[in-house]
Image (cartoon, rainbow, N blue to C red):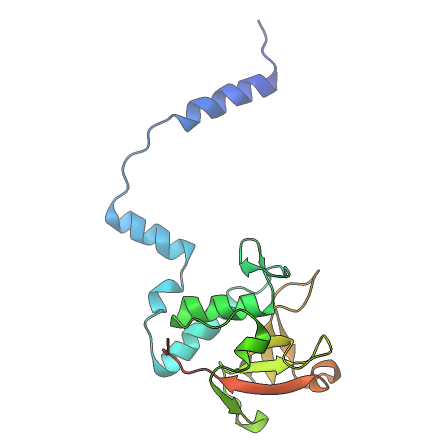
Length: 176
Protein backbone atom coordinates (compact mmCIF):
# COMPACT_ATOMS: atom_id res chain seq x y z
CA UNK A 1 0.00 0.00 0.00
CA UNK A 2 1.38 3.40 -0.98
CA UNK A 3 0.79 6.37 1.30
CA UNK A 4 0.78 9.88 -0.14
CA UNK A 5 3.96 11.81 0.59
CA UNK A 6 2.07 14.47 2.55
CA UNK A 7 0.61 11.81 4.86
CA UNK A 8 4.07 10.32 5.45
CA UNK A 9 5.40 13.79 6.27
CA UNK A 10 2.57 14.36 8.76
CA UNK A 11 3.21 11.02 10.48
CA UNK A 12 6.94 11.78 10.68
CA UNK A 13 6.26 15.26 12.11
CA UNK A 14 3.96 13.81 14.79
CA UNK A 15 6.56 11.19 15.68
CA UNK A 16 9.35 13.77 15.94
CA UNK A 17 7.26 16.10 18.11
CA UNK A 18 6.88 13.35 20.69
CA UNK A 19 10.57 12.38 20.63
CA UNK A 20 12.40 12.86 23.91
CA UNK A 21 15.34 15.25 24.12
CA UNK A 22 18.01 14.97 26.78
CA UNK A 23 17.93 17.67 29.48
CA UNK A 24 19.97 20.77 28.75
CA UNK A 25 22.82 21.61 31.14
CA UNK A 26 23.15 25.07 32.69
CA UNK A 27 26.20 25.78 30.47
CA UNK A 28 24.28 24.77 27.34
CA UNK A 29 21.32 26.92 28.40
CA UNK A 30 23.61 29.92 28.99
CA UNK A 31 25.25 29.40 25.59
CA UNK A 32 21.85 29.15 23.90
CA UNK A 33 20.68 32.35 25.63
CA UNK A 34 23.85 34.18 24.57
CA UNK A 35 23.43 33.01 20.98
CA UNK A 36 19.81 34.21 21.01
CA UNK A 37 20.88 37.61 22.40
CA UNK A 38 24.69 38.02 22.18
CA UNK A 39 24.59 41.61 23.45
CA UNK A 40 22.78 40.89 26.73
CA UNK A 41 25.98 39.95 28.59
CA UNK A 42 27.25 43.53 28.15
CA UNK A 43 24.13 45.14 29.58
CA UNK A 44 25.71 46.05 32.91
CA UNK A 45 28.58 48.06 31.35
CA UNK A 46 29.21 51.72 32.11
CA UNK A 47 31.00 54.67 30.55
CA UNK A 48 32.61 54.34 27.13
CA UNK A 49 32.13 50.60 27.19
CA UNK A 50 28.38 51.12 27.65
CA UNK A 51 28.24 53.40 24.60
CA UNK A 52 30.16 50.78 22.63
CA UNK A 53 27.64 48.16 23.71
CA UNK A 54 24.77 50.47 22.72
CA UNK A 55 26.24 50.97 19.25
CA UNK A 56 27.01 47.27 18.88
CA UNK A 57 23.41 46.40 19.77
CA UNK A 58 22.13 48.97 17.27
CA UNK A 59 24.42 47.74 14.48
CA UNK A 60 23.38 44.14 15.13
CA UNK A 61 19.89 45.14 13.98
CA UNK A 62 20.96 46.44 10.55
CA UNK A 63 18.60 45.00 7.97
CA UNK A 64 15.64 44.50 10.34
CA UNK A 65 12.43 45.59 8.61
CA UNK A 66 10.61 48.80 9.47
CA UNK A 67 7.11 48.33 10.82
CA UNK A 68 4.95 51.23 12.00
CA UNK A 69 4.35 50.74 15.73
CA UNK A 70 6.84 47.87 15.75
CA UNK A 71 8.81 47.16 18.91
CA UNK A 72 10.45 43.78 18.24
CA UNK A 73 13.21 42.78 15.81
CA UNK A 74 11.27 39.64 14.92
CA UNK A 75 8.17 41.53 13.78
CA UNK A 76 9.82 44.82 12.78
CA UNK A 77 10.73 48.13 14.41
CA UNK A 78 9.72 51.71 13.76
CA UNK A 79 12.21 54.49 14.55
CA UNK A 80 11.28 54.98 18.20
CA UNK A 81 10.67 51.26 18.75
CA UNK A 82 14.22 50.66 17.49
CA UNK A 83 15.70 53.27 19.86
CA UNK A 84 13.66 52.05 22.84
CA UNK A 85 14.65 48.42 22.17
CA UNK A 86 18.37 49.20 21.84
CA UNK A 87 18.52 51.35 25.00
CA UNK A 88 16.63 48.75 27.04
CA UNK A 89 18.74 45.83 25.80
CA UNK A 90 22.15 47.45 26.04
CA UNK A 91 21.88 49.97 28.87
CA UNK A 92 18.75 48.91 30.76
CA UNK A 93 17.40 52.44 30.17
CA UNK A 94 13.63 52.60 29.70
CA UNK A 95 12.85 55.39 27.22
CA UNK A 96 9.38 56.67 26.29
CA UNK A 97 7.72 55.04 23.27
CA UNK A 98 7.55 57.94 20.80
CA UNK A 99 10.27 60.12 19.29
CA UNK A 100 8.48 63.29 20.46
CA UNK A 101 8.50 61.98 24.05
CA UNK A 102 12.15 60.87 23.71
CA UNK A 103 13.03 64.45 22.73
CA UNK A 104 12.21 65.50 26.30
CA UNK A 105 14.59 62.99 27.95
CA UNK A 106 18.19 63.77 28.86
CA UNK A 107 19.80 67.06 27.98
CA UNK A 108 19.98 69.02 24.74
CA UNK A 109 23.25 68.79 22.81
CA UNK A 110 24.54 71.23 20.19
CA UNK A 111 25.23 69.61 16.82
CA UNK A 112 28.94 70.38 17.15
CA UNK A 113 29.06 68.51 20.47
CA UNK A 114 27.51 65.24 19.25
CA UNK A 115 29.19 62.05 20.42
CA UNK A 116 28.34 58.45 19.51
CA UNK A 117 25.25 57.28 21.36
CA UNK A 118 23.43 60.64 21.33
CA UNK A 119 19.88 60.69 20.00
CA UNK A 120 19.37 62.80 16.86
CA UNK A 121 15.92 64.11 15.91
CA UNK A 122 14.37 65.10 12.59
CA UNK A 123 11.13 66.51 11.18
CA UNK A 124 10.05 63.90 8.61
CA UNK A 125 6.28 64.18 8.98
CA UNK A 126 5.63 67.89 9.28
CA UNK A 127 6.27 68.25 13.01
CA UNK A 128 9.32 68.51 15.24
CA UNK A 129 10.96 65.34 16.48
CA UNK A 130 8.85 63.00 14.36
CA UNK A 131 11.91 60.82 13.65
CA UNK A 132 14.84 59.67 15.81
CA UNK A 133 18.13 57.86 15.31
CA UNK A 134 21.36 57.14 17.20
CA UNK A 135 24.43 59.17 16.30
CA UNK A 136 27.39 56.97 15.35
CA UNK A 137 30.06 59.63 14.75
CA UNK A 138 31.46 61.04 11.53
CA UNK A 139 28.11 62.71 10.72
CA UNK A 140 26.43 59.27 10.48
CA UNK A 141 23.44 57.89 12.36
CA UNK A 142 21.55 54.60 12.49
CA UNK A 143 17.77 54.53 12.27
CA UNK A 144 14.70 52.66 11.09
CA UNK A 145 13.54 54.88 8.19
CA UNK A 146 10.10 53.99 6.81
CA UNK A 147 7.79 51.31 5.42
CA UNK A 148 9.53 49.19 2.80
CA UNK A 149 12.99 49.91 4.22
CA UNK A 150 15.20 48.31 6.86
CA UNK A 151 17.36 49.66 9.68
CA UNK A 152 20.24 51.48 8.04
CA UNK A 153 23.08 53.94 8.51
CA UNK A 154 22.53 57.37 6.97
CA UNK A 155 24.58 60.54 6.56
CA UNK A 156 23.27 63.62 8.36
CA UNK A 157 25.02 65.76 5.75
CA UNK A 158 22.74 64.55 2.96
CA UNK A 159 20.39 67.34 1.96
CA UNK A 160 17.27 65.40 3.05
CA UNK A 161 18.54 64.90 6.61
CA UNK A 162 20.38 68.23 6.90
CA UNK A 163 17.18 70.11 6.09
CA UNK A 164 15.12 68.15 8.62
CA UNK A 165 17.50 68.05 11.59
CA UNK A 166 15.78 69.27 14.80
CA UNK A 167 18.40 68.70 17.48
CA UNK A 168 19.95 66.08 19.72
CA UNK A 169 19.70 64.78 23.27
CA UNK A 170 22.15 62.92 25.46
CA UNK A 171 20.49 60.29 27.63
CA UNK A 172 22.16 59.56 30.93
CA UNK A 173 23.74 56.14 30.64
CA UNK A 174 22.54 53.82 33.37
CA UNK A 175 19.74 56.15 34.46
CA UNK A 176 16.36 54.51 35.17
